[in-house]
Length: 219
Image (tube, rainbow, N blue to C red; front, side, top):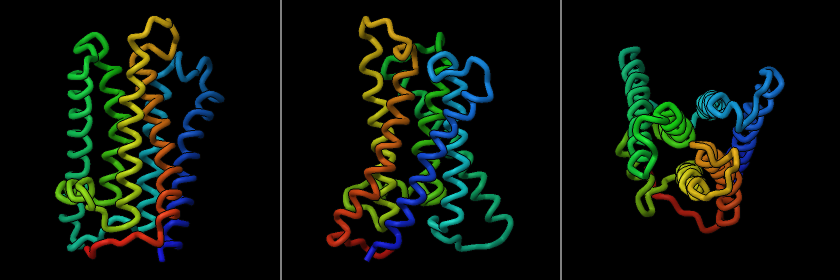
């Protein structure tokens, strides 16, 4: 029943994963001295930018986002402004949460905010692309049995894996191993990206495995 959408999802997720790969390889070729550890913020923003461009382009081409009720220029501009505002608020939210979890308040403010930007591109941006700037729809999807489509289910899994990956990435930081990937926020951003890639693989696989049992409420 869901085979066509699952194939679309698997193909789009493969392209998204390729975007992360290219965001790592291309700077390594073009920028002298580039490395994930040594020039971590450059890599972080390269990945965040690639994820943003690929997600926006793919979801626009697939038409996953719910259709707008109005087609006036004013309404479209309003949606764009609200989307940008939600992304900014998401960055501030993640920045605050990371500080509350123990990140230095001022010493590494740039690094902490950069991690917040990465998390926003992996999570909130996908919510905007799939559901539009509709906070009520976001809350509905992440509530119990709130998914109304296979894309909602994939959204739950990709966002969840990204956040859990960032959280797990914080565990090695206080250990006295003196490794370059223990420098803030390398392990957290690596964990977030690995979690994101895991979600991209796991979502279509899980949905395909359970496709005969999937039932969604009508929108």
